[in-house]
Amino acid sequence: MSLQLAWPWLLAALPLPLLAWWLPAARAARPAALRFPFPGVLQAALAGPAARRSRLLPAAAILAWALLVLAAARPQQVGETVHVPVTGRSLMLAVDLSGSMQTPDMQLGGRDVSRLEAVKAVAGDFIARRAGDRIGLILFGDRAYVQAPLTLDRATVHTLLDEAQIGLAGQQTAIGDAIGLAIKRLQQAPAGNRVLVLLTDGASNAGSIDPLKAADLAAQQGVRIYTIGVGSDQFTVRGPFGFAQTVASDLDEDTLRAIANKTGGQFFRASDTASLKQIYAELDKIEPLSKDAQSWRPIDELYMWPLGGALVLSVLIALRLAGGGVFGIGTAGAGRRHA
Picture 1 (tube, rainbow, N blue to C red):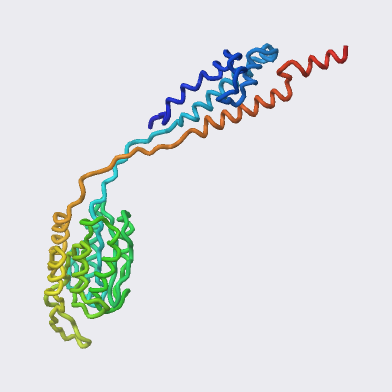
Picture 2: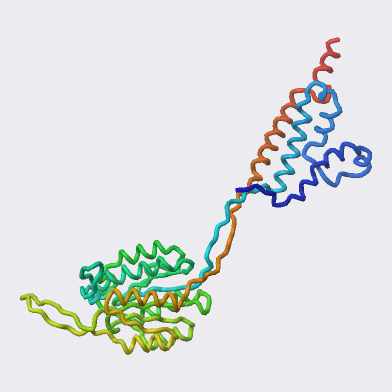
């Protein structure tokens, strides 16, 4: 913490009342170009009979003027330097919440978890590492919804991702709609820094926009799309009578790969939690964080304190003049009338 004056050159005005007092002839010759709050008070206090009765009055007048000049010079309290990373990317995460994302074919901490739980855990770490990036969250199923707009508040995005539930956006998969919504949200971001990371475990079977046409539009808008296919190639489900059945994944790798290629991104396959973590580590390398930072120091304006002090002193001086007979009229005049 330190104190400074924003306009220190204004302190040169401090001796002006003394100059006005020392040059009465010059003041009488022409109208004053610069008016002081109480020039008559200062002159009377320094030269009149009141100066002999109260030496506090001229001191108060001088102090009030000094406080006014100090307030005009804008005293400030400057805080410690704060380093803020420069925003490197505008990055949207689009997460599939269709019914198949509840398939428990992933492992986390030695236990079987659903695909969505694995995505939450790994994507949460990815979000936490993206300091300086503006991150948004899109959830999609039958339709796509913006759960969090682009923001530097990574903690809130992480929380909203943790609160996402299967079926919240429907049971099907509208990949094209998710891409279209991301493009709309990224339009205001700086060109060259628009990134979409799309996670899904199935083929597009809902929505009003074809995924490949949406990818073409993303390429025109300069949005790079990284697609991640989540889930194992085959998984086992148990029927109502305990019979196990092996089911193949319906992930449309060709479409996801084409989307990434059209936009200058990349397709990744995450068949387990370990590969998902590796994918996010790779994304950190492909879309690096900005190492630049802006520094600033918070500034609090303090001019109101000397300004308030000058106002209080001015009021006290006015009250003293009103009741004390500064110009030698009050009490002395009354004595002559009694005589």
